[in-house]
Length: 248
Ligand SMILES: [Zn+2]
Image 1 (cartoon, rainbow, N blue to C red):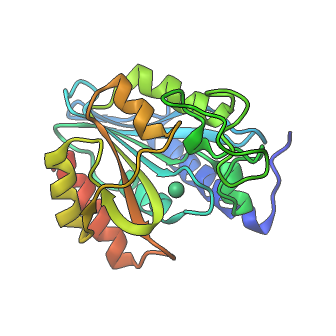
Image 2: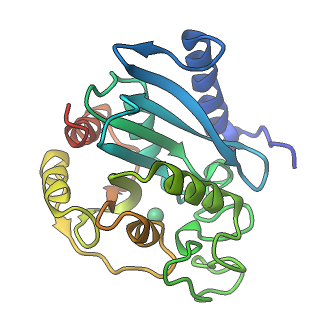
């Protein structure tokens, strides 16, 4: 299906613009190297409505520390995408391979909906503990089957390939770092640096982090940013907290 160019579709357009600038800056391959580090954009797949889903790789591809940041999984929770975009525009980590997926649910972001264009809550569509918990039309509809959606399937392929040693999945609006599944020391430090409390949230069936932790144990955690649009100062604080995770 063609990508709709509506006022609400500014985000994918902005992302494409950023990718185009990156490609122009980096040459035809979309990659540039300096001191063994890279800054390149890698296509991961597409959404139900055909919007591209991409990752930006920043840093040393050979580094043992592989950090994944997913900015926006629920389309009505866009704050993390601003953090991801700022990270992607920043310097390359010298001692980590940083992977940034600004928007995993571009259709939901364009429409301002939690779910994707099928009305599926992508954070209930992953294989670990997947259950039929919400009917079609409900906020937590898990899809017809695990990874039935192109967005979650693209994320799963990517995670299996990269096997991030730390993964941060941004959400909104609880203003808390979920200290229940990921690396405890990283969660604690991230919470302190980000100025958010550390608290354990429930482990939802079919969640992305729950599944990712079956691929690389104790690696993935959720950061619930506050509601609304983050101030430039807040974005800088979250970016700096992620950069501490990469060792920079
Ligand atoms: Zn969310």
